Amino acid sequence: MNTVGSLHWLVGAIITVALLDAAACDAARVTENAVLPTLAPESSRTTPEASLSSTADPFVDLANAFPGFGGSFHYPGETTIFVYLTDPTIDLDPLKRAILYKFYPSNVDPDGIEIVALQGRYDWRQLQEWYEYSRDLWPLGINSSDIQESEKRLEFGASDEDAVAAITQAFLARGVPADAFEVHVEAPFTVD
Image (tube, rainbow, N blue to C red; front, side):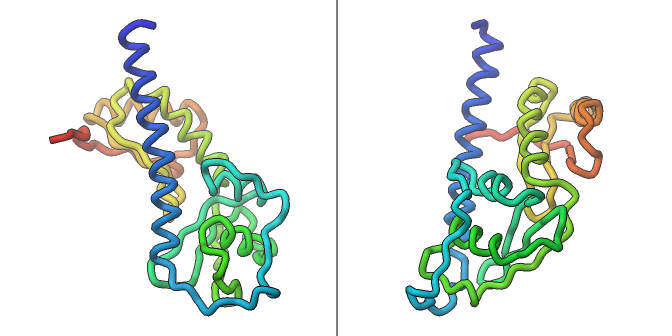
């Protein structure tokens, strides 16, 4: 493997570890910031669908179990969970149980949590696929990347305006809709 190939592999490995760490931190933060309603009696607690998989990314698990799931978010200290769905008319109860299972302690009363469906344009798997494609674009000048769950959009920081144009063109050529991503100039991350 040449030096450039080794560098690309190292950057990819660092990004993968950072993404997995960020997903774990997001799940922990959701649990820490949640207002936990009164405990449900043991006999009334429900379990999510048996088909709910268990990967490193709970959003992938939910997307696999609920086609059209595009992500979810909530505001700290509140009991409403907002869920992006490509079909917001689906039955929300099984999805609510699955979200509680993935993100909240087992002693949360499901009746104390409200789920609000928001119209999503893309499901989580589409966003993840486009995000994975971005790994090939780092040599064009990407400095940072993120999936903005609350905005259902990919965000990328680029080294300069030329990089913004090149990255934008690469995404559009790949068929990624223009409203599914944003690229802006951003200084590279440095460790002091």
